[in-house]
Length: 53
Image (tube, rainbow, N blue to C red):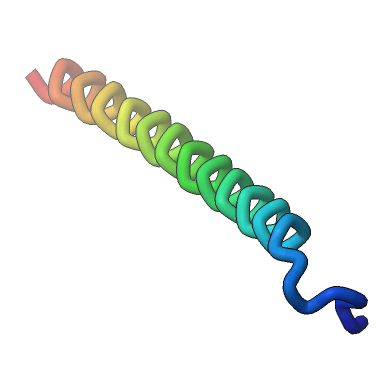
């Protein structure tokens, strides 16, 4: 698809903003998932340590 006006940067800026927002959302979601997984591992380790005593 060709851009009718190659000097029109508004569309390109909107695409860049959208891509930036999408990447930011992905990284924030990954961080949350990683944090939750780490919290579960810590809880399991504590539970196992208490059971071993």
